Length: 369
Ligand code: FNR
Image (cartoon, rainbow, N blue to C red; front, side, top):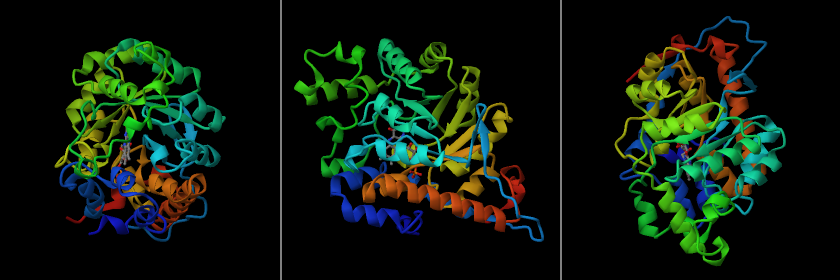
C-alpha cells in the first residue's frame, strides 16, 4: 500500500512534494530507518474493519469530547510539529490560527520557529497545550513552563521518545538539519535562561546558539526522576507523549501524569517499533480509565479516528496531514484539512449507526488480520 494515497484531502503528500524542496519535504515525510514503523502505523488501521449497525436514529450527532474539564468539538487535536517555517513563512502561526478558528486544540512544539507568546497572541481564546522536550537544565525547564503558563497554555505535554534523535536517512542524505539556520528556535532564542548561557545574542551567532539548544535537548539522562521534577513545577495537567508500553504508561501514572499520549513520533524515532494502534489496547487495559489516553500515528481519515476511539482512545492527534496542508497554502489549507476531517468523521459515525462518541466502543470493530 502506498502511504501517498491515504492522506486526507486531495492527497496531501503529493501536493506538498510539488511545492517543497527535497530537504523540507524529506524532513516531514521521512521516518527512521527503513520506515517500517511509519508505514506500520498507517497499515495497522487496515487490521480492523468497522461493523456498522443499521436502523438507528442518527439525526442528532455529537462528536465532542471532554478532557481535563474542557469540552472540544471533535475528538482530535493538532499534534506538536516543530520547525514550521521550513513549510510556510507563517510557521506555527498558520496551524495555530486555523485550529483556534475551528475550536480545535493545538499543541505547540518546543521547537517552534515562532515564540510561544506570539502563538498565544494569535490564538486568542483558542485552546492550546505546550509540548516540552525536557532540557538538561532544570532552570530552563522552569522557564519554559512558566512562559507556557503565563501565555495561557492549558496543559503540558512532555515528549519522552526523543531524548536522542532517530536514524533519519532522508535527512542524512539531504544533509538537512533546519535548526542550524535558526528555524525551530523561536522559543529557545527568546528565553532569558537560555540566552544567559550564550556568549553573545543568538542572532549574532545563530549556528552556535542552535547547537547549544540541540545539546540541551539531547537529554539522554532523562528518567522518571526528572519527570517527577517537571510534575512538581506545574499545576497544569501533565501528559507524556511517546510511549507504546503498558508498563511505562503505569509508571507515568505513578509519577503523577494526568494523561498518556500513545505515540512513536510518527515512526521518526525507533524503526521497527510497534504501531501505535496495535499498542493502544494493552495501554487502555493497564490504565483502566483512570486518566485519558490519546494516541497518534497514521491518522489520515475519519475512519481512522473512529477506530482509535473504539479501541479506547479519548482523542487522537493529527500530524503530517496538517503539515502537508501548511506547506501547500498556509492557514487556509490547514483549515480545509480540519474541516474535511470533521465532516468525514461525523459522516462515518452516522453511517456506522452511532450518534455520539459514547456509542463508539470495541463492538464497532472487527479484527480482520
Ligand atoms: C513531529 N512530531 C513531533 N512531536 C513532538 O512531540 N514534538 C515535535 O516537535 C515534533 N515535530 C515533528 C515534526 C515533524 C515534521 C513530524 C512529521 C512529526 C511527531 C508528531 O507530534 C506526531 O507524533 C506524528 O506526526 C504522528 O504521526 P503521523 O500521523 O504524522 O504519521
